[in-house]
Length: 399
Image (cartoon, rainbow, N blue to C red; front, side, top):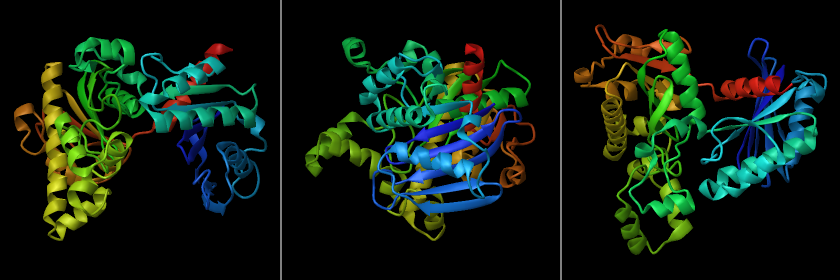
């Protein structure tokens, strides 16, 4: 079975074609600037890479170009789109309506659209992608939706509820939903398999331009740092993370901005970028800190400190800790951030081997220090493979 994995943004379409016989990636690529002047596709396959500027008025034209790139020319990996057995879609927000991955129906697309106010940019893009996929591939090719939020549906009410009137939850579904669930699920499963135990108390740290921390006990999410939206939690590339709500109203008064404009400010002007004044990219911020930029140094220290606090609080919530997992762009590649987070955590049984921490030795790295009671792992996440596996399982079960 060949599964096409899709991640649609408002103006982008990421894709991978995975052969589920051996879970190998046949090709992958990105359509950018959909609906915007200067749109293009970058396609990688057979050891090569090809880029073309192509007008993409909508996601439908982007899907058509993806099919062309996969089936013709040097980047071809299949003879015809009929070789694609199913399509798996990443969807950010499933709210409480979706507790597992689902085979797509028109009713499911309508429900994803209905709950779009909880993730307006993401969910509407996913709806466009789902409708475009059906238009290009036809009704006979099954589509599957895999939600970022479903892994977090095992959280108890004491973890997902906010201290606001209960009717806000009943009427408007205001609660903690979390994000990056597909990544947290993948790395927690990989850690359990690596350590040969299904009964682990672990904290998984997905650190990148967007970051989230999850408490996972015996394979189930008990708590997570992101909230109603992906704005909550630790400092991120351009997102503020946790704030006293009064900070928002105070800034509104001072800046004279309100509503969506303030939401955009908190999502796009804050975080590493806002504190450092340098960049939203951790690599740039670290380089600036090394060059003596005090604000950049502060930004890196804030992030490490906040991650450390989440690990400690989740260890307390779970009644212990067996494993800490780092993943995502920063988690997998920034050895200094990992070292800073784990520094002075010996009281929790956490220590890191400096030499192991600095080396990149594979998709799973054990960087635990000698005598560390808690395993510290670096695991390369693979959300696309997780989506492909869910898609394959659901399609085969439906036959």
